Image (tube, rainbow, N blue to C red; front, top):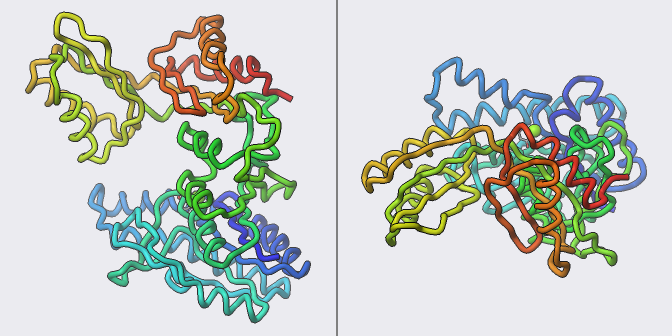
Length: 403
Ligand code: ASP
Ligand code: MG
């Protein structure tokens, strides 16, 4: 078997965790499997490096230097892990993203992989050694060090698994798999044995933080078998599979997200081009708009609401207010006290009543719905943030997801 094992920041947060991870790698190696390791920066190191840059120069952050800085976190982790492996008698070599053959574009702090040529990684494997690759990094077409963005180590692992034709890609983290709801909110949330790529993609888009959405997309497109599991208990986790299982549950999971805010522009003249202008300007400012609702117009005016990341609220408000002034809209308001609860399940495609159950459950608990959006396998409702926890609990119960 050939396996790629990716260890996240919490998995290697301190020397003891580092040794525990090295032991697992050693076990895999001694079993006769070929193992390639991808590692994130230790603990909260990426955040700390970002803070250091801020302390040195405030908001002025040249991309090339930021990437040199941030990738140092992963580089340090690869070397330490190899040192731990050597102490256990396991031959291991550390590689930066560049050495491992990750060629990227020049989009610093959020580079995209163009090609993976893992010759040195393959050579290390062929000579019986364990390659340990720094996650989330590469070298650009301009030969500068690049960072693949937050959560990019998952993508590094999946891309390596595909390039090396690995049998599986194991993503080790601090939870034991993918759950039917956040176990911190719902005590009887269950770990799923399997989840389909389509469902997991919808879950990550709806706010499920791990694994990183980009890596799930890559794995789906390239048929990489993913196994999301814990480096704390080492138990079997959740397999992400191509196939939907035979008895497809109507609803597989409830997902919560409180990272977005809502902006409303009221009294908008109802004529072609206004939504086009607003959302083009937001896009040009890199605001990632999520839900959009436009009301039925009355007396030639309407209103438009949208949600966007809280981090982008200031920019969103400035852009929306400027447009409101230009077109004579009556006002712009925002609400950062909203949240989104979503239900996801491939089985809803062929079953009526899923939305009705969701709305009835929320209504029965006195939870008002402010916005609704759907895909083929997801229904999302925007509600008040202070009712989010309760919404997740009652929906998880209403669809019978508990253990
Ligand atoms: N250490 C980086 C981050 O926290 C990359 C990663 O862990 O995937 O975003
Ligand atoms: Mg991380």
